[in-house]
Image 1: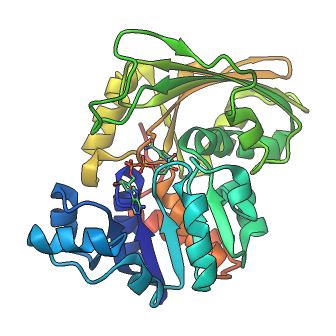
Image 2 (image 1 turned 30 degrees about the vertical axis):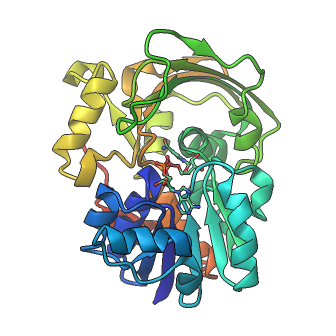
Amino acid sequence: MIKVGINGYGTIGRRVADAVRLQNDMTIVGIVKTKPDYLAREASSTFNVFANNKENLKNFEDAGIKASGTVDDLLQSVDVMVDCTPEGMGEKNREIYRKNKVKGIFQGGEEANVAEQSFNAYSSYDRSVGKKFLRVVSCNTTGLARTIYPLMKKFGVESVDATLIRRATDPNDSKKGPINAIEPSLKFPSHHGPDLKTVLDIENVGTVAIKVPTTLMHVHSVSLQTKSTPSKDAIMEEWGKFNRIILVSGKSGISSTSQVMDLAREFGRKRGDLFEIAVWKESLFISGNNIRYIQAVHQESDVVPENIDAIRAIMGDADREKSITNTDNTMGIFKREL
Ligand code: NAD
C-alpha cells in the first residue's frame, strides 16, 4: 500500500483524497488543513486531519474538531505528499518534504521547475517513473495534452494554436472575478503554451487566454497542423481509444457548458465532477492538414485521475497502461455513447 498524505484540502485536494480512497494499492494517512472550517469538520469523519502548524492545531481543538497532529507528524508516516496548497506554496513546502525524505506531487499553479518532471498520464508517464518530485500540469494544460496527444501519436503534430476561454473562478469562491468583464491575458503566448511543452514534445505552441464571467468550465478552441492529412472518422476513432476524452454533440442537446455539466451530474459522481475532456463532435473541422475543434474542461476535476497516476509513477510503477486502466475503472471513467 502506498501511504499518501494530502497537503491542502481545497478544490483539488479533497477530490484527490476521495480518488485515492477508491484505489486498492494506496491509502490516505491524513489530510492537512489550516482552518477548522466546514470542510475540516466534514473531512474529519472520513480522514485523519492534521493542522499545518502548532498554532492552528490549537484552533482545531478549540473548535471541537479532532486533529491528529501537525504536518510534521504526518510527514513521518507517508511515502508521498500530494501538495494541493495555493499557487507558490508548494515550492516552499518542497523543503520539508525533502528534509523528511518524502516524495512530493505538486499542482499546476507551481512553476515547472518545482519538480524534476511535469506530468500528464497519457503523454509523460514514462518520463516520470521513480522521480522525487512531480508536478501535475494545470487543468487547462491537462485538457490540451489529453486531446492533442492521441493526434500527435497517430498523425504527427507540427504546431498548435489554441484560444483558451477561461472560467473566472471556481463555484465555491465569492471573491474573485471578473463578474462583468472579459479579461484577456496581455502576454503572448499565455503561460499555457510553454506549459504544454513540459509534457508534450512539440516546438510550436501558441496560446491566448481570455477570462470570462462563468464558474462552470473552461472552453478551448484548438487549431493544429498535422503532418499527415487525417479524415474526421480517423480522428474520432483515435480519440475514441482514450477514456478520458468524451465526444459530445449539439444534436443531443449539449450546446454549451451548462449542458456538459448537467450531463456530468447525470453520471452521478460525487460533486457532479467531469474527469473527462468534452469535445464537441460538430466542431471538428478539417482543411488539408489544419484541424480545428472545440472542447470543454471541468477545471475542478480533470486533473484528479492524473494525480492518481502520478502517485503510481512517482512510486516507481512503470506500467502506464495498467495504472491508467486501474484509475479509470475505480473512478468510473469509461467510454459512453452520447
Ligand atoms: P484552493 O484554494 O481551493 O485550496 C487550497 C487549500 O490549501 C485551501 O483549503 C487552503 O486553506 C489550504 N492551504 C493554504 N495554505 C496552506 C498550508 N500552508 N498548508 C496546508 N494547506 C494550506 O486551491 P485549489 O484550487 O485546490 O488549487 C490548488 C492547486 O491546484 C494550485 O496549484 C492550483 O493552481 C492547482 N489547480 C487548481 C485548479 C482549479 O481550477 N481550482 C485546477 C487545476 C489545478
